Amino acid sequence: MSEENREKLALELERKAYKLRIMELEMMRDSEASGHYGGSMSVMDILTVLYFKVMRVDPHNEDWEDRDRFVLSKGHACNALCPVLAEKGFFSRDILPTFNKLDSPFGMHPDKNKISGCDASTGSLGHGAPIAVGMAMAGKYLKKDYRVYVVVGDGEVAEGSNWEAIEIASHFKVDNLCATIDRNKYSLDGSTEGPGVFKEGGIEGTMTLEPIDKKLEDFGWHVIKCDGHDFIQLMGAYDEAARTKGRPTVIIADTLKGKGISFIEDKYEWHYGQFTPEQYKTAIDELTATLKRLEQKSA
Ligand SMILES: Cc1ncc(C[n+]2csc(CCOP(=O)(O)OP(=O)(O)O)c2C)c(N)n1
Image 1 (cartoon, rainbow, N blue to C red):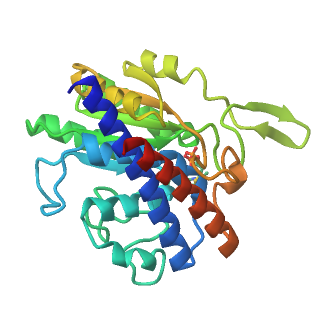
Image 2: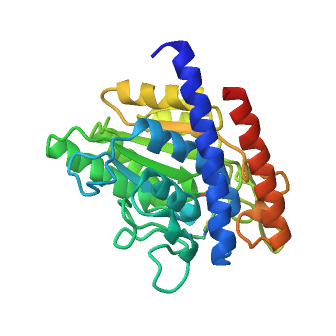
């Protein structure tokens, strides 16, 4: 693809990601659900590139054996996944406002038995990477050429089950596996950067994640670092992952928790919550203004 076409595609994807952010907030507003705003906004650009540029999936044949597989290990960002799958054509966007209601296919976390196009039920952190490694190993064993993509939260990396999966993946050289870490620097109740020290009465802070790139390299993975909101960089990272042979790839995507909505950006307090009607309006107005700017840029 020429550089000019790549830039055009990047802009098109960025517009799509803002449209999806707006769809998500309308879904949440109309369903009157609370939800995970911070991590759904940080991961939206990654999901957009995966579903609208990288992955080979067919909404008209969701069980297609040779499809690429996707696992949203940070399942609490289901409110980002639902609009993406609707936009991709797996189901009508008209049913999004049932989000998190009784009898809806969409709960706070994704259920593969209920959501069309969803390959793995997740929500209990630390399970997605092991599931994805199993899918990738099955693909190798069955001599299929599908690829497996898993998105993990940076706070989630602390779950020990990930490290078992990370070790197995490099041992079995599953180069059909690509993990992405949504590196937004926050977990549920604070920073992922520590300090993790003893204090009178307990421990203060989480353990530090860094140097996460070196740890993963030492475990035998190919590591790529990129800006998780730069569409050219994201597309380049996934291209490089597909070219990488003999070991799995992890993309450490530097992101901003709450990306796109100024009053929640970089604030772990908005990991989970519920907007007031005024906050929905402010957020949707902001996202719409960004979308309009992007549309003008591409006109
Ligand atoms: C096993 C498990 N423990 C605790 C939780 C509760 N929980 C939900 S989200 C979250 C924080 C995850 O942080 P991170 O992976 O960084 O997600 P992000 O910031 O990208 O939303 C926690 C602890 C859970 N879902 N599963």
